Length: 169
Image 1 (cartoon, one colour):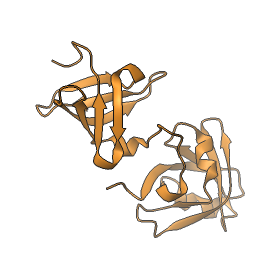
Image 2 (tube, one colour):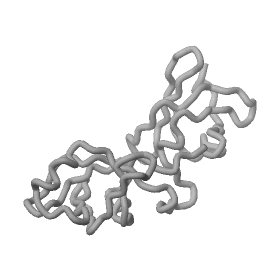
Image 3 (cartoon, helix red, strand yellow):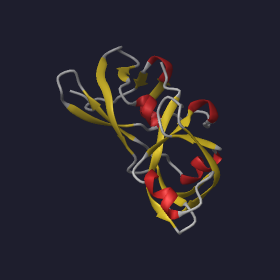
Image 4 (tube, one colour):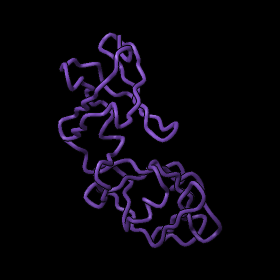
């Protein structure tokens, strides 16, 4: 089952003296978070944070929370993880939340062989790289580039791949 609330970032410090906070986003682009009118302080959506304003600033987001008007009032939020509601997020076709891929089973589309599960995803260049842990505890890196990808099924926690000879022992 997909989580209804996803980790979106962390407040890392204040910005100025009027209660703004610097939010380090855990997404591809800081501007993605500026689409949300509400973030949450918990993964159940029970502690909403109404947003007065958000704007991208370099690799961060400057967030102004509703009702927070001073640096003193903003300080308690430093170090807090914020969540977004999946229902409020619209992704482009073919895009997925990293959190939905972590733990997914990686299976050969042609042979049905399970290679392991995705333990981490890095973004070193144009395409993501999946760190796959085998049932025996070994780690393999796999390029999530179109020639090697068959299908991603986040609802069932499955990633079908087309590896070439030598990618896996």
